Length: 237
Image (cartoon, rainbow, N blue to C red; front, side):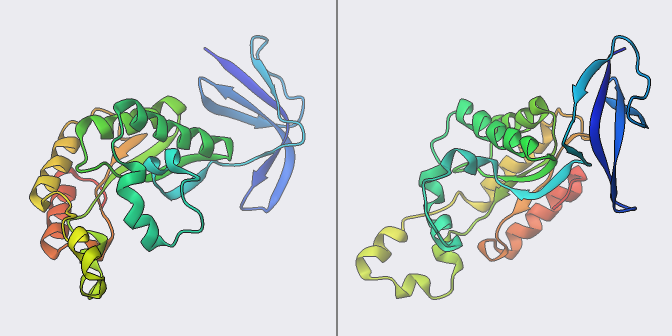
């Protein structure tokens, strides 16, 4: 049985609004006891100093995108519209190592900032894959976070989603933009279904979901298809 004693920190009590000095005994990765500074601990317990530190429950990042971690710094003061337009070239052509690394980097960064759970809307181009979703999930598992992995999917491009945008473009740009297409909706839905059917992680810690994103980038039929998948696999939407 592995023991660890965390000494010298202030433990946040959210209900009372206090942060009193306390020691924490951890047994097999589970908090077993909180007590006053200097509380007894097993002789073989590893001692961790939390001097001058605040100990609090893990934070939750309720909206993150693992695919974006390797693209940080590639844009400056972009609007959402510019980011959506640039997304294929800043996050496409990823190898399996890239997919795992970008998720792992984000998970490590979150843990270092006190975040222990996340809802990740992860995208692959042109389609989500079983391997890609598995690699993102395994990255969170390896770092020790809880996570919801929700493949981010749509069946309309940004240019198709904004009413009148295509018509407002100059002729030379419109011709090029008109060639941009996402994968057919049915193919995307089939890929999401395959990824969820292949899920092998403990849902208590790493669970799947479906993320049709952004609503006006999705047809009504596509959103209904996502809802059907979520219902079939008992996951969030």
